[in-house]
Amino acid sequence: LSRSLIAIRHLDPNTIRDLLELAQAFRSKIRNGELLPSHADKTVGLLFFENSTRTRVSFEQAAALLGCKISAFTSAGSSMTKGETLKDTIMTLSRERINCMVIRHKASGAPGFAQPYLQGPIVNAGDGQHEHPTQALGDALTILDRKGKIKGLRVAIVGDVLHSRVARSNAWLLDKLGAEVRLVGPRNLMPRYPGLLPGKVGNRLEEGIEGADVVMCLRLQNERMSEGAIGSVREFASSYQINEDSLRYAHPDCVVMHPGPINRGVEIDDATADGPRSMILDQVENSVFVRTAVLHYSFGGGSL
Ligand code: ASP
Image (cartoon, rainbow, N blue to C red; front, side, top):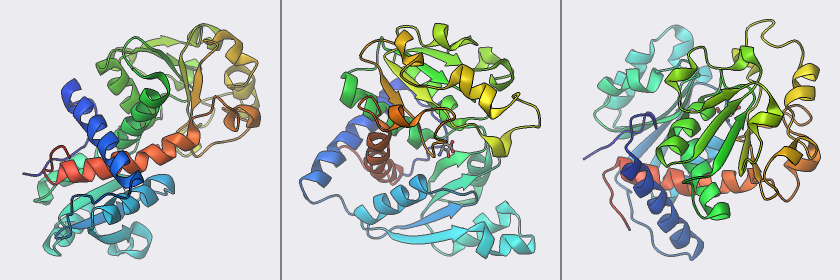
C-alpha cells in the first residue's frame, strides 16, 4: 500500500487528525531516543526544482530517521538543463529504484502531474501557488501544542494570500478541523475567486485580526508577483505588518506564526519575530516530526 500526499484539500478531517497523531507519536519517540519503524528498504528521491532550506533539510532528516536511503536531485545539476521534461525525468528516476518522491516545483500541479509515472507515493513539498501540505500539518501541530485545540480558534492568515501555497494548505486544513479562517491582505494579493478557498476575506488588518488567537504572516512572494501588484514594500508594511502595534487588535494571548523565510521589517518586525508570541522555530521543529510521519504513512505505515 502506498499513499501520496499531494494536497490538504482532498484529505478528510480524520486522515488529517491521524497524521497529526502520528507526528506526535513520532515526536515523543524521537525525543526519548526510542526505536522507530524502519524503512531501510526504501529510497526516497528528494526532487527540489525550486530553492528551499527548511523543507529540504527536514525531509532529509525525516528520511534518515526512518533509515531510508536518500537520493537528492536538483534541477540545476541535472539533465533538465539539457531540456529533459519532468515526465521523462520522473520515468527515468522510477526505473532507478526510487520508491518515493518528494517534489518541490515552481509549477502548480507538478507533483500531481508526476504521479502516473511513478509506482510509489509522491509527497508534495510545495508546488507553485497550489499547496504545501506538510507545512500546514506542521503548523497545525504547533497550534495544537500552544492552544490545545484547533476547533473554534480564530486564525488570521495575513499578506500575500494570492501567491501563497502555505495560505491555501492552511486554509483548507484549519477549516476542515473547525477553525474560523480569515484571509487578510491588499486587494491585489487576495485570491481571484475567494469563494473557492475557505475563509472570510478582508482588506483591513485591524478588522481581520480582531480577536484572533493565531496570526499567520506570509512572505511577499516577489518571485511570483507581477509588476505593480502592490504600491511598494514600504506601503505594504505600513498597512499589513504584524508588530506589537497591530497586534493590539488580536486576542491578548495570540500567537504569531510565519512559514519562513522571513522578510524582517516587511511582513513582521524583529521584536515580534523574536518575541514570546513567535512560534516560528517551533513550526520548523515540528515539521521534522510531521515529515517523518508523512513518509511513514506514504509507505503504508500505521500508528506506532
Ligand atoms: N517556505 C514556504 C514555501 O515554500 C513559504 C515561502 O517561501 O514564503 O512556500
